[in-house]
Image 1 (cartoon, helix red, strand yellow):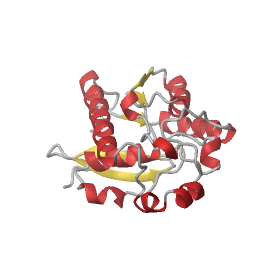
Image 2: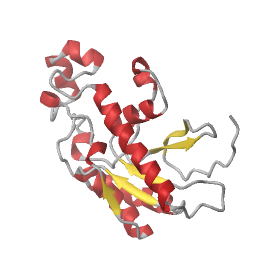
Image 3: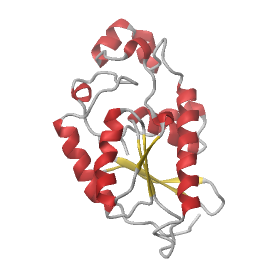
Length: 208
């Protein structure tokens, strides 16, 4: 799940790893998402340690009684000199870099994909190891991971085995919307839902 709205989101500023808190709208979004996701009885909650993500995860932790585990590898892409700039400012000052969305002194997309995918792997392994409230339903377990828009899209792309040149194929995540990844019988991951904001139905099919 992507974090809730911040003031910088509303102003269309590049946040990167700048630690910007949720605004009032973002706090309401987090409370609503928590009520929906708590109904799915998650087994584990893992969050980026940036406050906009951990603040989004906190209501879900309170409703479920689960401790929120912080993982700094779930942080957003470091944006270098772009952090704090609006999209218009970036376009005007860095037109060539803006065309490929590559901050000149920021973190490369491949590096973000690798570290976030590793964090997603750890969350999946942890929930499988501890057992699941869903063991009688055909599901192996449910981990809710709270992170950031670019970080999640890049990490999921890597987890799904997409080549680097297709990292832009997944569309953006709205604030407090989520994607659902499942495990295929052959051990590979698959994308079941993307940019969802309503209660997903558990998918029990093992079709290939």
